[in-house]
Image (cartoon, rainbow, N blue to C red; front, side, top):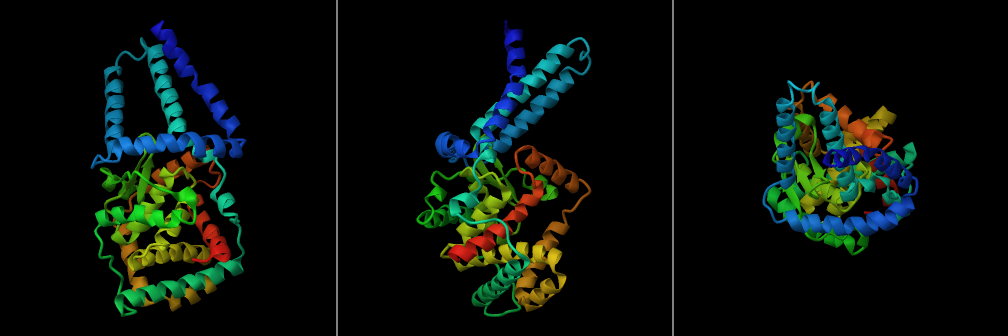
Length: 355
């Protein structure tokens, strides 16, 4: 009976996949009953359960899981043929249970209504609007940099510690939630990842653990990126799965901070996305705006580039392609390029609401 039960659970992955894809055809249903119904309850419970722990429970969970899988493979290395059916059933069982927990705890958010529907804005934009908005960000970023340093040639250094950024992030969410209640955030679970060094070699600033509800930030990234990355990962906690959406949430939340250093971190980061997009579409316009940037802002960009360059390695593109495939499987047709969707959201949000 036990073997039959294990087989049934293993095979249940197929109807699960069909059910997820079926529900995914009705994003309004997912939004109402999962993203705004079931998920917030699960998310708050997980944050309450693990948020107080000073280290990443999720990272330890992954460590135990990986070692358990390796131990299982080692134990069954000689008798795979004799136990082939059981091994296949065990693999199917693991995949089925993981698939179920992933979608129950968070994964169905990939099929919710996009954030632009809540904000009543569009994602599409013209080159003219991109050019105009980039010019606005250049002026804003230059002004913040000069206000902070008093010297257009000096790079900005955030005076806060990384732990202080974590403490400030929920407060920034509180400010934004006064205007947008769907960004209400309580019961913090924001932590440095134990695997920060591997994350750096993989090229990631952080990640969200859907099994423990923890927002993880790469402890090694420069402090200038900490405010927006922290707010980005909290955006995932609130149920926004699309990377462009959480990039936008990160910028929106941090831009509303009453700390000018957070504001600079936001505008300089958003400007980097817009300049990158503009460079692909109009090299001449990109050069004009790049020349208008204060040398202190350029210095900050150079420092960030130097950080990532020292960790570049042949395996990084492979990790990026794996994540790209993961996003596409989970209803993100643009894959890793969805990060850049933030440009359209920023342009259209600014046009309607301002910053």
